[in-house]
Image (cartoon, rainbow, N blue to C red; front, side):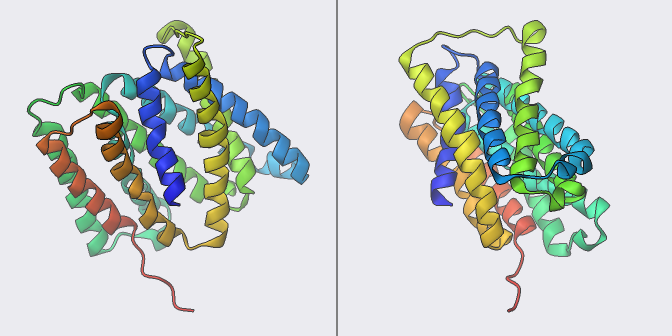
Length: 283
């Protein structure tokens, strides 16, 4: 989990660093297409029955659309704000997922502790947005896009948890999402976001990292861990991702967080921790 969190933190930093040479939206499109092809090979090797495709197609298409929309927003946000800002605002997703699940699943109703966590995270978002002084390369529009990406991620979680995808093999669920992350940018780029690409060795190496390590290895490893360990325990580790993003953004690309963002980020992560933490079940 620590390795996966490090990979996910490097994802946004890599997209931002390579943005002048290759548009982030184009990179996301390419990496998702390559990873989807690799995953299709895995699914075929596993011999998943065709009935699973028919039963999960509607929910899978919706999850794929939301996943693709999320990465469209991420691709645009990394051009307009810092990688650390993108990651922290993106990790508000559990808040939106908890609200959605509380609406659709009676057993997921929010307790007083979780409502307090919601309020704390909302206050942190307000501080990070409104308390800024000189945020450098971080813009309000970029932060808003990253927050919207968190909303889309949370909505994807709700769709997966409340549909046929909840009992569908993880490889098939991930395949729907990767196809969505390929098709959405491919349809939008030609008329809304003209891509640019400079085929340097660094850009190709970064694309290989994004396709093979991020989209293929890390996502499959995450689903595999979910089958072995309690999700709540893994969720605690996932909060290392925004921490890594802030530290690595500072060390690698000189992104120094302003005081308002640092305070807001702490409040956001603490609130998300309160919302997502569940006591360990007794044996």
